[in-house]
Length: 112
Image 1: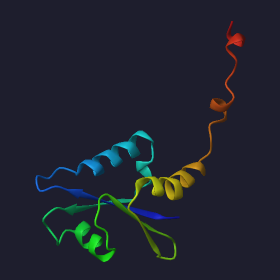
Image 2 (image 1 turned 180 degrees about the vertical axis):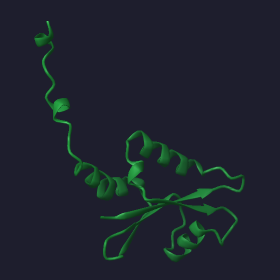
Image 3 (image 1 turned 135 degrees about the vertical axis):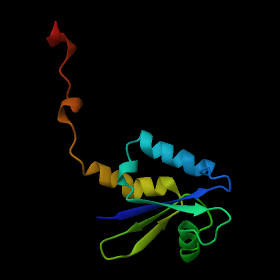
């Protein structure tokens, strides 16, 4: 099972960058944020912040970005949310059991 770290940037005034805010809001709306195991902050102007150090290690120059570690410890870097969604988040979500009653609802005529 993958361990997913989201690295998001906070601007100098302490607010998330607009793209980070948008991506996180989208993940919450789609019920996918619970798949994120850890959120790390890249503080603008603070090269010693953990997120800035990770950005340097993985040579990433945009936020947000995601680090996906597999069971063997290999790490994949995702700088594009939709690629993460397609390759990691949606496949994991599809493994959850479906609610069969929602797939085959009872016809309304049976309620009359």
